[in-house]
Length: 148
Image (cartoon, rainbow, N blue to C red; front, side, top):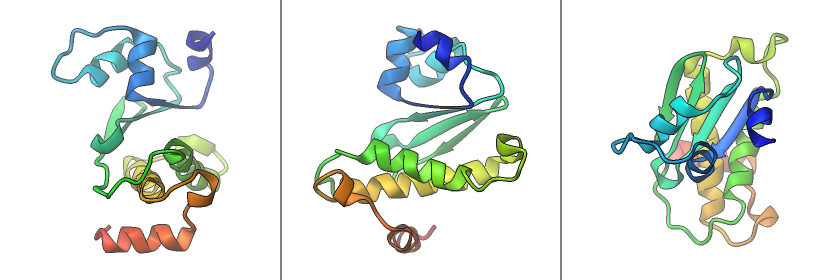
């Protein structure tokens, strides 16, 4: 069922562990995520996002890979980080042009992933899930403090 759904969605978000579970072992020892992405039979017109914890995130879009590093923060707990990340992605994708994903550029994707990483990083510094979600102002201030 998962393999079928992967081919039908417009946006697929996986953790690196999810991806490796889906595709099985890869021979690429230097970059197992890249090896697994090559094995993933996904919708070629969709956006694939793979979070890699503190190493950041990468996205595949129309044959291009965009990588964004994570932020170094003092982690209190990681509950809610994935939800915050996806909320950050959705908040940037939702107001797109009427063509939807077709208007995504690598720069826009990089900015979106940086924003989503910031959302997750802030949540990682707090306890609790729903109560730890940042406001837009908090994300903007965090990014400004990070020089982004």
